[in-house]
Image 1 (cartoon, rainbow, N blue to C red):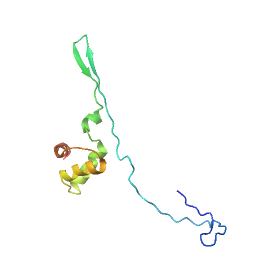
Image 2: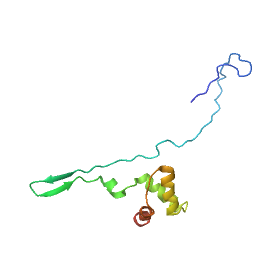
Image 3: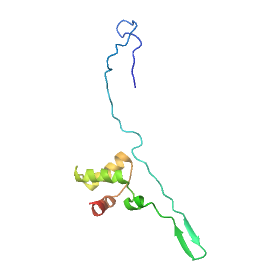
Length: 115
């Protein structure tokens, strides 16, 4: 975003750009949506011929990771491994900052699954 001056702030006179590189100021902000939830619906089907119920199959990468996607798993691993955050603090972070309600037990599964 370029912030321009219309007139001299001291006298109100006309201004001319000098051609010099502009002064840069950057600001980092969290965006409103930090994550995306994708819902996979698996309708049930009945086969009259073999008398069996069937459902669709989740994509392999979804079935493999479960509730959390790869990036969220990496965040949990970093916070547990590098930052030494407790499961209770992780649970509180997910609820307070991200608005995701999960149990300590779910987070404990990361150690068994990915640890």
